[in-house]
Amino acid sequence: MINELALHRLSKLRSSKIIWVFIGACVFLALPTILPIIFVDQMAPGSVGAESAAAPFFMLVNFMGHIAALILGITTWRIDYRDGTLLTFAARPIARIELLVGKIIGSLYGLLIYLFIAVALYAVIHLVFFRFAIPGVAPLYLLQLLTAWLSTFGLGLLFSNFGNPLLATFLAALYWFLSIMGNIFQQLPFQTLQVIGDVLKFLSIDNNRTYSLDAILKSDISSVSPILSGIGYYFAWSVLLLSLSILLFNKREFINKRS
Amino acid sequence: MTVAIRFDNVRKTYRERGNRKEALKGLSFEVPSGEIVGFLGPNGAGKTTAMHILLDFIQANEGRAEILGIDSRDPRSREQVGFLPEIFNFDGFLKGEEFLRLFARLGGAKQSQVTGRIAELLEILDMPTAGGIKIRNYSKGMTQKIGLAQALIADPQVLILDEPTSGMDPIAKARIKQLLQKLRSQGKTVFLSTHILSDIEDIADRVAIINNGELLAVEKLGVLLNSEQSSYRIAFQPHGAEVIALLQARLSVSIEGDIATVTSQNRADKDFALETILRHGGDIIGVKQTGASLLNKFLKLVEHEELSDDK
Ligand SMILES: Nc1ncnc2c1ncn2[C@@H]1O[C@H](COP(=O)(O)OP(=O)(O)OP(=O)(O)O)[C@@H](O)[C@H]1O
Ligand SMILES: [Mg+2]
Image 1 (tube, each protein chain N blue to C red):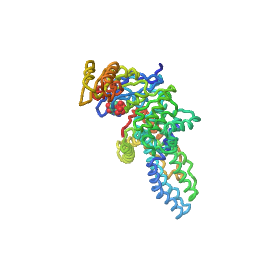
Image 2 (cartoon, chains in turn cyan, brown):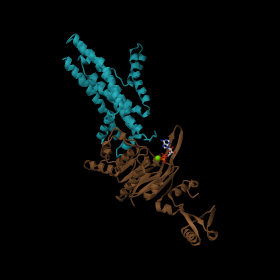
Image 3 (cartoon, helix red, strand yellow):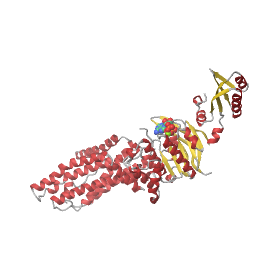
Image 4 (tube, helix red, strand yellow):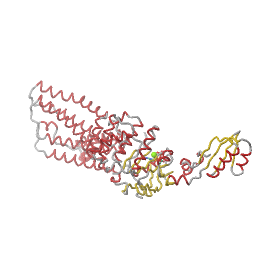
């Protein structure tokens, strides 16, 4: 049952316009990040800086992943609620939780497909232009990426309860703002301000990742425990946000709207 | 008599920006299984609200509803239910067949029977080729029909239909009526709201009438109609004054130009009037039975008698 719902969510996603806008934006933005990787190789084959050249690409993958997760979260059940298709699903002998979990899983399939395409693209570029070793922590890093997206997804899902997608996006953007403010406060000389910075950082669902992307790409790390703690942190946030969303959905009244 | 649907003192208050709207005020009634039951009431009476509580889309403030003995808040209560919403919209990117297949699976229908069932339903609904067309390219009536097919796909025991024929042409309506009667003959229960009273008169076994969130009547159709006084109006062209005098001795006669109208309150009086006119000279223009229609009973119950066609 859940799988049927997940696959339906995925095919509805495929048929929506926003997904093509997203793909277009990704391709448009990815080109300038892929070109440097190729250029660096042309100018100085096998140079030490080659790994660093891949950093912008992964920063883009990371950022667009958050955007995708947010869109997926906001639209997981809201679109069906709006267009009235949710009622026919809810009239089936399906528990509310099952209904939402099915849709969540469908959304997450979408996120996994995105990650898969990004990694495959990188692997192709990597094989064609470079021969440097893929860092051993890469799978862990990807897992951290996924859990971070999952928490953003949870944020979108929770905020979709407000009904207005713009409001939901605005609130999610507020989290990035909190994260930036937190970073700034943490840099300030006074201790109280630094504590405020820590609190803002905590609220922003961002943590201080010890390793830069650059370090990861160069395998320049001494221990994997910071990555593991990052995964745990994002995962905890995700569980909290998803549970809250499910709780709210369970209580929601499905009001039929006259359009 | 087993009960298919039960409402037990269901209250529902909507709150909207400080405004309270009591949509259901302690609704209680039962729908016996194996019957077609019409759910009638003026706009805003609370029909959709009651149906949505039955399907657990919204929660009652008080009271409870059940389907086949299972509380409506339990998803299992919907295992034997097919539902068509009043305001419907189905995923336009799906082809008719894909849509029905999905809902068959969600309803737990046996995979082996689904293909045949889809073809059969599309045939009955007079759109045998619609299975290969995307729903977004359907007409309004077709969309409504595919919604009905969706409700029927898992062969449910109980059908809950919120204004199922509102956008359909007369042919489609006739087909749906036939289909519902066939379902009843198979022992299925049909609970439908509609504003088309003539349809209800044709096929329903029972009607439940609500107004302002309160139940006004739930009765077998025959009982409801028989409780209503019917009267007859006979219009005729009298040949001379004798016939008028004879009629006036027993009944009220009104004359306009050369047309006279005699009103009788029962069958015996009607027979008397007809006999008198035929025997003593008059051309009968028309005989009209009034009062005993569901419309008149409905208007009386919802206190809008002035709109009755008797007046
Ligand atoms: N979501 C809502 N918020 C506030 N009031 C509502 C809501 N839904 C329905 N109502 C009110 O509850 C009452 C009953 O509405 P309902 O839709 O159940 O009527 P209905 O009998 O189905 O009418 P119709 O024949 O027009 O479909 C109406 O007064 C309506 O305004
Ligand atoms: Mg209604």
